[in-house]
Image 1 (cartoon, rainbow, N blue to C red):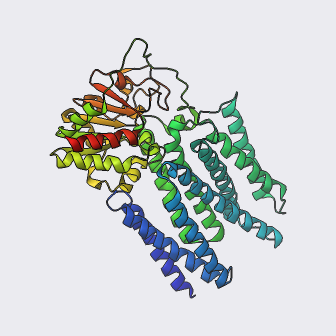
Image 2 (spheres, rainbow, N blue to C red):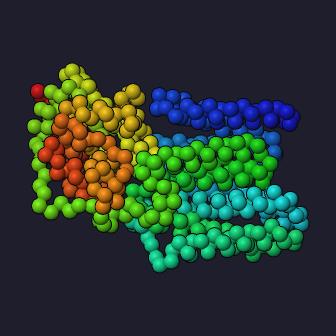
Image 3 (cartoon, rainbow, N blue to C red):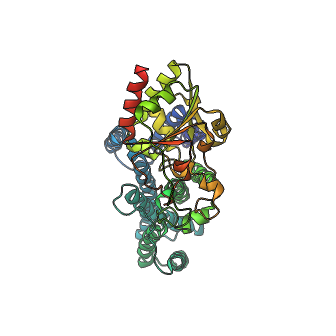
Length: 462
């Protein structure tokens, strides 16, 4: 393939990546943006593989077909509750790919007796470091989300010191590797091993409540690792794509941190979100008011304005379709329904948006926190389904609470609140939710899908 045509196709793929990323900023255009990015990636793969002559055409086609079928199976078979785990794994695969490519280029130079230029040497070591950290860190994030290991923070004495020393040793070994004219392999393997260890050490102290930020950050790491690998193999498109993923991931991580009123440093080193139960007010002496399905159905059936607040419990119950049916019933009776989406609801960025989009909830009804918060005061009913910390008024009222200062959804400002939960268990912050004891709040206990199904039946009978 002529060089000019190759670069032109790479440019087309890069433009598709950029446009696709831009269109991902809105739920209305997100699917089209995802499709454009996918087409760009296909073009990039075909141009790179066919031009470089790395493999036979038969092997290339087998790889594309097998990979496409595997991706299609994952997209269709993985449940929405497991989507965060899949995203964590995909981040890890991206980091692992950069690690393998960077390592292969280093070993190739060693076998040929070549000394890479300084810039290639530096980017090679960075691709090894960041790729390995992303791979092992993502696997730990997957294990926490999948509950293969505890989701609580895992800490030990002098943990930050150990992490810092590990990083310093990695930098020292990488610098030695770059500065040594003769290719010595033991630092190469040591850098990879210690970087994999560092990825584990960085993620184990992070609790479940911070997983949306961690997934976003690991996604950024995978992009940065890809960009470094692009410099190693002199692939401009890989540099562009990696930079896009890396920068957008960092921006998203900052947005998530802002939504939690915490710094990125605090998320990474604060060991928050483990459900330790420390801080906050006690519920001793307080009582909750329960509501029957029949009474809840009457409230919702005759309400003029209902705001649904979805949380992870909705995803666990796989109740998104029945929620859509409930909203349709309310609207047919003359009511208005909107959905209030907190930035950190669920286990990954945009988890609730994806969940409700799967149920074909109209995009214009999905409202971000800043858009909807002022509307709660005119809502007849706030229906909270499986959400906890993101509606806890302690974030506004209790300076001793670990979530104090975190922006929350103003569900307590609604005229009436119905909270659907299995029981009175605390959220990831490990504290009591003041909303549950609000005089305006009625608790509807049980499995969300079953309770919603009964609500739909009762409203139909009104």
